[in-house]
Image (tube, rainbow, N blue to C red; front, side, top):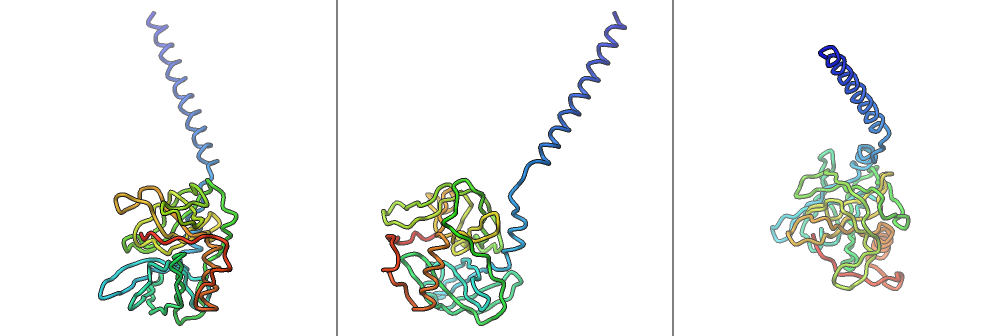
Length: 248
């Protein structure tokens, strides 16, 4: 009987080892096959084009984000980041600092175009917001609460969203963590291309609660081009209703 128990215990031990090894091998293979979004590549390719924006208005200091859309110094951001500011300061990833000039704003779409006097700047890759798919992975780079070059990620929750004030703008809804200071920063797809400008959140606490909204980049670029050429936006060119902004 003792001999039988001995061999039985040996069998159970060997079976357990084989089972554990099989599970470990299977789990390792599973991990090898998982393909995570290339967020490190996104950061490497895009972060140099993302800037921290500081503004001073009536001796009050506030922060936001922007990104370079041309190598001669044009930067896109939110209107509510720079509107009525006495001074606009742009801080690059390498800590180079510039004073920026406000080229123009459109408060109806929350778009602003600013410029610094510099050449050969790293331009961010512009995507096509018409191709956005619900469920695709996205990332944001910005300066939440002043922590510049912070990246957060999530998915596109919905497209063509309107906010509760019943005025229409086809916002991109995501669950990417957006907080004060992220305003004006890029929403990037997994190719590292800008598909939106992070603009607004819905919250009861004043901070992120899982509902973030971005302006589609196609609309933003059209608005920026009109500001650059005419200094203002010609409303007749666009077939969508416009939305008063809800600031972060």
